[in-house]
Amino acid sequence: MKTPVSVLVLSSLLALTVWTTGDLSGSPAGYVVAGTPTTTNAAEGPEVVEDSMHEFMEYVFQPTYRRLKVTMAAEPVDNSGWKALKSDSLILAESCNLLFARLPEKNADDWARHATASRSEGSALYQAARGKDFVKATSAYKRMLNNCNACHRQFENGKHILVP
Ligand code: HEC
Image 1: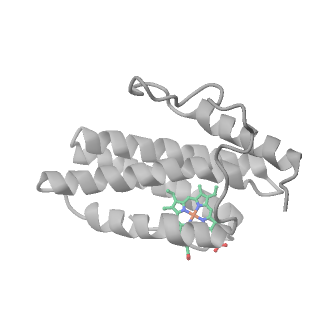
Image 2: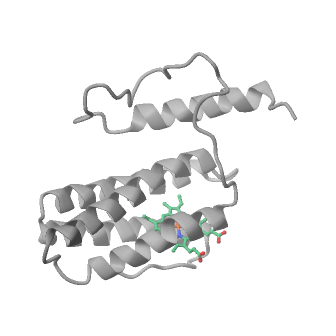
């Protein structure tokens, strides 16, 4: 089956949104993370793999959150603990960008606001983990979960309230 042109145009726009809303500081030379896509072929680019929000949260967000919760229970004692923290916080922060490709039909602005806030606190958690600052990490972690929960409250009738 051929993909309709409108879908392709929409997915390139979404790709562009993800690219242009990303934090561009510190991107290593040689990687294009912003601006126009490097290909003119609209069929090449980001595309949603799992369009069920339930499966997406269950397989991308939930296992990451569960690992993070264990890691955040006490300050990491060695480098592998900090690496685990950096990995899971980065996975969650970047995964929040993927929520922009899954806007709901109603209240899409609120959805985008929750996704932005969760990503930004996830990013703060990642940066704190890079700096091995557990005090900062703990407060960013709690702020991130508050924003994850804000979306769950609005769009899931208060189900899935996550605790640090
Ligand atoms: C923009 C909205 C939004 C944001 C932001 C959001 N979620 Fe969710 N989340 C949902 C929705 C919608 C569901 C319910 C999916 C379903 O079951 O249909 C959900 C469900 C979940 C679940 C339950 C999954 C299951 O299988 O029972 C977990 C865990 C979860 N989210 C973790 C997170 C974490 C961690 C964050 C923050 C880093 C986060 N979510 C941010 C919308 C969001």
